Length: 102
Image (tube, rainbow, N blue to C red; front, side, top):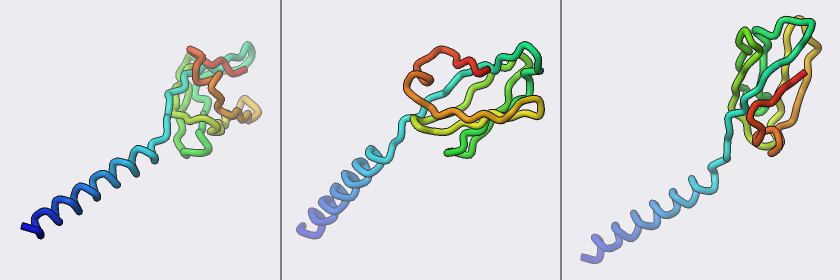
């Protein structure tokens, strides 16, 4: 009987520890939606790289993109027809509907 209770206790402690650990490890991510805007250059196929997560995406024919970000991530925007640009993700950028990058 004591061994059975001890097993249940150990299992309960393990489960509570695991739930607590995974709860603290979760990091809030958001999908940043944006648009590359230019009067003179093509806005399609511009590369957007999240330097922290190493994920990337390219813009569509209208210059639109979306990418997963976290606060303080760095994004690099680059294309042959543009000078590279880097931006730091802030709450203001995340809370905007669509971020326009010139």
